[in-house]
Length: 148
Image 1: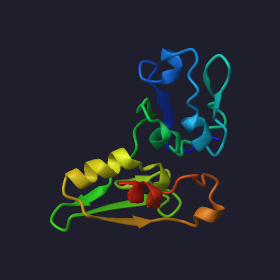
Image 2: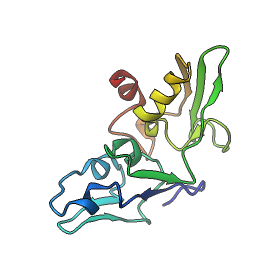
Image 3: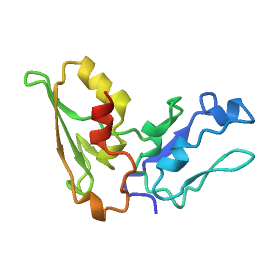
């Protein structure tokens, strides 16, 4: 079920609490995944590559920043003079390119903070109908913005 762009989550075992503590109970990445590609068992965190669509919702959910995407989440198009960043979801803009991400809701607080720290004060987005998307998120990009 992996998307054509090939984004797969990569979990850094040196950062993931499940590799560091046998009794770890964090399940944020598994809860964020709309496809149950990540699951917490008594022994470890498991990943089902066949169920993964590459939407990236697991990445901002991880409190330890242990998850990255390979290749990585696309960079927004930034207009520094206007203080704006532009992002579009892959449903709204089906051709890969600058500023197109698998899902807008996979853009988390870390990326938004980096944009704000670089002078971006406005985020412009384009998206498809999230209510019909197979990658519907439990946490929206709006919630990430509000959290900042």
